[in-house]
Image (cartoon, rainbow, N blue to C red; front, top):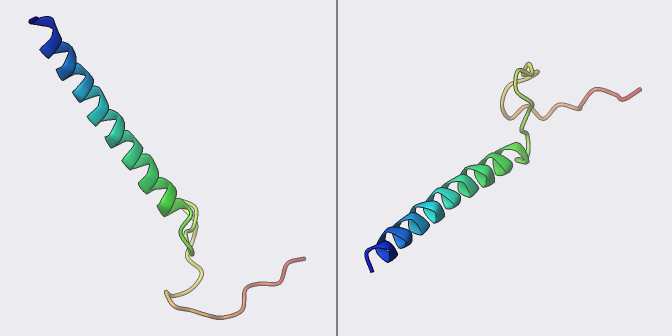
Length: 58
């Protein structure tokens, strides 16, 4: 009977760790797919709220 509480504790810790990892991944995906998100290291071309026309595509 002493092994059961230890196993339940390990399962609970594993579930909390899995939930934390999933929450971080979800947050990163939401930030990555957000409107106006730019790749890391990309230069900002204008000010926030600048609604000028985008450059023409050749």
